[in-house]
Amino acid sequence: MKRLVTALLLLAFAQLPALAQAPDPAAGKSLWDGNNTFCKNCHGKNGEGAFGPDLAGRGLSAAQFQQAVRKPWGVMPAFIEDQVSDAELAGMAAYFATLPKSAEPGPWRVPVAAEASHGQQVYMSQGCAQCHGATFDMPRASFGGRAGDFAQMKELVYTHTTAMPKLEPTRPGQRLRMGNFNTLRLSEGQMKEIYDWAHDEIGFRPALQAQLAAGNGATYALNVANNGEAGKGLAAQGVTIDLVIPAGITVASATGNGYKGVHMDALAKANVAEWQVPRIAPKDAQAFTITLSQPPANAADLKGTIRWAKPAPKTGPNLDVVNFGIRPAGPGR
Ligand code: HEC
Ligand code: HEC
Image (cartoon, rainbow, N blue to C red; front, side, top):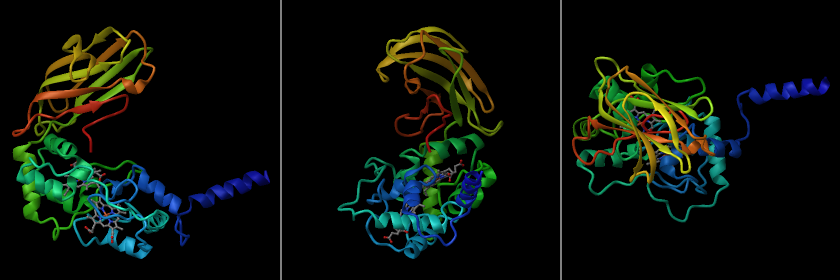
């Protein structure tokens, strides 16, 4: 009993916020490595430097670290206490103090493409691509789903931590991973160039989302939804849904609109089961099922893609895709 009480007390203390505690480098490392912050997208997996400067072994104090994150002097967005607390920043500073200095910064996670248009170059050189990829997929889908305008884009970039929760309530325990950009470093003119590239050149995307779930035995359910707002969002037209069938497995049966059967796919270098749906409008959802000869040994091998003919990027190749697997999935961040 006494042991139980002690254990409960310890547990209770473990839940208290880290008040005036010594910085915890292990906690700093796990926050850096995990999914709650995306600092590493710019500073490198081990703080070796990339788009942002190297942090490993640089000997920055907790106070210097905190200042750089709350009031960045350059292009880095500012992060607030809810996103990363002072104690957590002290932990990160302590973690980087345990690492050797980086000999040379690593490459940018997403380099500026030489063939990029002017607007896309501004987007890339401001750091957005380090998290959103070369083609800005997730925001293009959100904006395509609600016909977002320039005023809304500005709000979401300059005052991200207050504007984002108004549009999309965060789940408990979930942190916003993008910080607030500074109008002095990312001017409104540059922001407009980014918006115009996203809206007029590459264009917005329909807000498609796919969910693949295991059902009974070797039957799987695939749901494809257009999360756009009725009357505002873009419809996807000429939609092709491909599900990769792992080697050694065959399709026993399939249901859903537009099932075309199985073919060898040159791109996936595998058999794929395909559905073709003429149009998925905002608020539409389509349900498909597939029954295989046996479940794949590794569920992660069951995955696929959604592509659509229209709307297509107005310039450049159509690389728009939504990848899905046994997990809720949408366009990548
Ligand atoms: C968009 C890319 C980007 C992201 C994301 C980012 N940084 Fe930075 N960081 C930079 C750049 C660029 C600088 C150089 C100074 C500036 O631009 O303010 C910098 C500077 C710093 C510095 C000061 C380094 C020095 O030499 O003085 C620290 C500390 C730092 N960042 C920590 C973080 C932490 C912690 C996070 C996540 C919460 C983070 N950064 C997220 C790009 C980024
Ligand atoms: C550190 C990674 C990171 C960087 C750098 C970044 N973003 Fe984001 N952005 C995100 C994430 C993650 C979200 C989703 C909300 C969140 O977690 O903050 C988001 C959300 C957004 C949204 C709102 C999307 C919606 O659902 O309406 C817009 C717009 C956006 N980003 C634009 C930009 C632009 C423009 C830049 C460059 C100036 C940029 N982002 C830089 C990670 C980043």
